[in-house]
Structure formats: structure tokens, C-alpha cells
Length: 238
Ligand SMILES: NC(=O)c1ccc[n+]([C@@H]2O[C@H](COP(=O)([O-])OP(=O)(O)OC[C@H]3O[C@@H](n4cnc5c(N)ncnc54)[C@H](OP(=O)(O)O)[C@@H]3O)[C@@H](O)[C@H]2O)c1
Image (tube, rainbow, N blue to C red; front, side, top):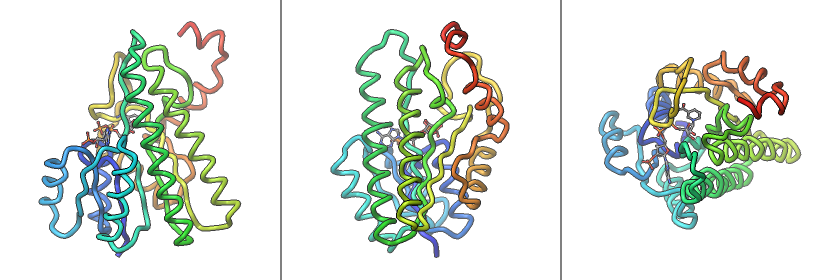
């Protein structure tokens, strides 16, 4: 039986991925801060889930909990980091920016490194993280969200390069959603908003194919190509 951990499985994309993995025969460690939601999910499919509640911004506890969870699962093949945060911050309130950095940069890096080191020791494994299309350019509305997602994209590329240089079958998949219908989809003028179910299904396909990068839904790939090409002098006026 394959073993997976999902960081951020209490709601949204992470929760839906947990359900899909369980349906596909995985034993899944589900995490997040809201323990009652983890327990609700556990009740839905007997024997499929093991819960562990912690805040990824608490660096030391996160590692202790992941070590415990991996022992309970009796192994690990797949680690998915879905936890993330982001807020519109027109006033540049530093508290919002700091919280975003604590979760999307420090918390993310702590877990990605833990996972990579685990897989390196094991000589195999698959690390998946949900970054965002937002990581491709800056944003005046949510500067820290886009910047931290850009960090994640770059960090995952670094880990992918590291696994290639180690010549180990450790796969690193960067999932870049456009808009998915969850609490995270904030702001005006949202378009091509995917259902969580459709997004999770496409993410699972990308995982099975061990893709390096996947845009969710697929058509966001075209927006990504366009966004990257827009010259700075035009982008600054958008
Ligand atoms: N929805 C979109 O349009 C969209 C687009 C691009 C990228 N994404 C990315 O997709 C990922 C999942 O978001 P979602 O759309 O599924 O939204 P969501 O339903 O709000 O899920 C966010 C998840 O992150 C967890 N989380 C947040 N802060 C945490 C912390 N300090 N410690 C541990 N877990 C924490 C939450 O669990 P608890 O609150 O229980 O801790 C929850 O499970 C995020 O990384 C987001 O940036 C989403």
C-alpha cells in the first residue's frame, strides 16, 4: 500500500486530493490546524486516513509531528504541500506580509527540506507542492502572496536539479493553479474558476505522470505564456 502525507488537507485542494488518494488505495496522513475538520474527513473513509494537527509556521513542532506521522504510516512515498496563505494587502500591512512569509516561505521550506531529506535517505519519493500561477509576476494587490509563490517555484526547481545531480528517482512536481473555487480565491475579476473536484483530478493526473510543472486547469498554461512575455513598462500599468 502506498503512503502519502498531505500538508493542508482540512479544506480546498488538499482535502479533495486526500479523498482522491484514498479512493486510489493510498494510506494518507492528513494535516492542518483545524483538527475537527481532519477528524470529519477521517470518519468518511474508515482506515484510509491518519490525522495530525499542527501549524506549519511552528517549525520545530512541524518536524516532530511529521516524524511521528511517518512512523504511524510506516513509510512515505508521496508528500504534498498544499498549505498556503495569502491576502489582499493594499495598505502594505507588515503583519499580513510576515504571516504570509512565515507560512509560504519558512513553513514551506521546512517541510520541503524534511521531505527531500527523507526521500534522499530512502533513495526514492515524490514531492509535490501547490504553488500558483501568481508566482510568475508581481502583484500590487497582494505583493507577498505573489513573491512567496515565486520563491516556491524557484525552490522546487532547485530541489529538482538537486535530485537530478544525485541521480536518484526523487520527483518534484510544481502545481500552478490559476483560480480554484476555495477560500483562497480572493479579489475582483476572477475568471476560469475551476471547481475543486476538477482541479484535484487534474493534479492527481499530473502526479501520476510525475510532471515537473503542471498548470491547473490546463488552459492556464496559455495565460502563463502570455503573462511571462508582457514587458515591464506595460505590466507596471496593469
Ligand atoms: N484557490 C485558488 O484559486 C488557488 C490558486 C493558486 C494557488 N492556490 C494554492 O493552493 C493551496 C491550497 O489552497 P486552497 O485553494 O485549497 O485554499 P484553502 O481551502 O483555504 O486551503 C488552505 C489550506 O492551507 C492550510 N493552512 C493554512 N495556513 C496553515 C498553517 N499555518 N499551518 C498549517 N496549514 C495551514 C489550511 O488548513 P488550516 O486552516 O486547517 O490550518 C488549509 O487546509 C495554497 O497553497 C494556495 O496558495 C490556490
